[in-house]
Amino acid sequence: MTPDPIPARLAALKTATTPDLKAQWRELFDSEPPPFNRRYLESRLAYRIQELAYGGLKPETIKRLEQLGEELDGGDRKKRAMRLDRDRPIIGTRLIREWQGVEQVVTVTQGGFEWQGRPYQSLSAIARAITGTRWNGWVFFGLKNHRRAA
Image (cartoon, rainbow, N blue to C red; front, side, top):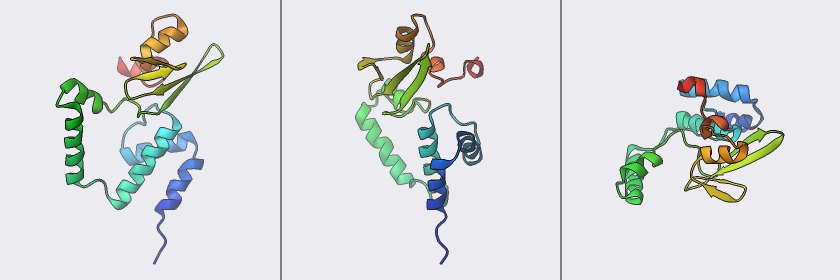
């Protein structure tokens, strides 16, 4: 019996360069990688590698997860849109941006974002607090390429 190559492939993600991770993303997802941090790329690539090798979630599991989501948000369309927002970083993600020589760290929370121990509803409000000017928070933190969005 030949050894399973998947664990070695997963371990190699930790030492791969970011350009290598992005190249793997393009190969495995057939799309451009999102502008999220390295940890996000590693975790999603690890899942995708395993999904392709061992199979993804069963359709009944996906259906059950959707049902649980509906129970949580009570069928509220706005809440469901937030739940299904694929561009939003996962809870716990740390967004790091250097501004005028100072590293700014924002944590994604259940209800929005946290910066310097204070909760915020939007990244734009945090960007404004940091810079003193109006910014698109997603652009400021590198989550959205403003040229691509235009």
